Length: 481
Ligand SMILES: Nc1ncnc2c1ncn2[C@@H]1O[C@H](COP(=O)(O)OP(=O)(O)OP(=O)(O)O)[C@@H](O)[C@H]1O
Ligand SMILES: [Mg+2]
Image (cartoon, rainbow, N blue to C red; front, side):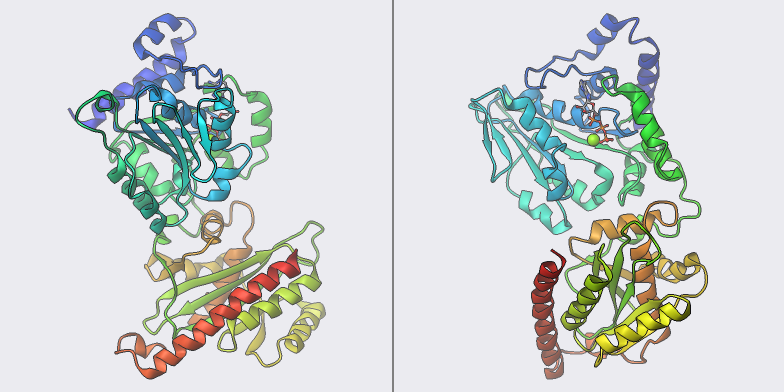
């Protein structure tokens, strides 16, 4: 049987259930056969959550749609279903540690649900609940692809990705290698399940859509949640809030719309899948600053993007410095960053029009005496300035250096000009244009030849610069604090 037939059954069931669940509740419940667990914090699953939990025979299921549809609750319920089986292990992942540790996170929710059971021990260091029978529920994060190796030991019978579109496809697939059960005993009867939940949007939108949502390419059931599917939520108040969102984000969050095409959007997330630990030493580099607008009352962001180009013309987004600072702090941060980057990095600052712009650039020129520095008057529409970087990324030339800013940076890029800020797009595009327009003829020849003494010296210099960058980052944090 092809997958599409199974998929149609799921879709039909959902539509029929939405229409008739209230009337024929008993009938539906007997079909869906949900056993409520005492570990679910008193929550009784709603109809769509029951559908999700009933799909036990499917190795993969994706619960994706509108915000507030009850997806995270369902993931946690699923994880807690087999705790009576000795040795059962479940793992729930978020992309970053910060997301995991937030007060309303799924981990925090589990702590609330399980607080009244003193026999279940919480290990803060491992982020793991341990049942007396040896069953475990663990929470983890996977910021970088290389973090997958942190999970290359234990075996799990349930792995759930909350906000799946924030993960890379590599991370998702890697975890399949950790899902197994013994061939005998009680644990052998437990289903092996990978589960995902997410709104549309985010860096993983395209691969998640392809794997679960697009009928022709889907490989596993997709359960589309709507806000109305979660009667525990004050839907009227929530719709009022969502009405304030920018148009694309609103359609994604309010309607769970996976199809809305980013017409007019410039960057696509699949163009930014190439991560490296560092850029080659002998690159040509520009640090481009987009200063917070001085005429705005609310705090705006100042961003400095360090972009490098090697001898082959490959581009590396190497560092992003970003903050909401007053003019005094901006000066200190820019100076500290220049010292950390070193004199080989050329510094450019976007120059506002008029006399005040000239004055600002004059001040920075004095501050950055000894560096290759210029003010660059902004010209043309933003979209025109972003397009060359987008085009290089589309052609597979842009790599991202692994760092904590990666996620925010890519999220912003893939949403401009529709959603939120665009300062990182401005700064990175500014640096890229400088590289493209001032490209030296033979940069990075040594990248393809045997490493020479000169290279080693350059490595040493870069190492020193990196150390300075580390120190200055610490100083910068002190300045900012
Ligand atoms: N069956 C339930 N019983 C009681 N409360 C529920 C139930 N399902 C969900 N909720 C509550 O509704 C709220 C929204 O649910 P949840 O966070 O699971 O939605 P979500 O789809 O993950 O939202 P988002 O898209 O914002 O991540 C939460 O406070 C959750 O605890
Ligand atoms: Mg959620």
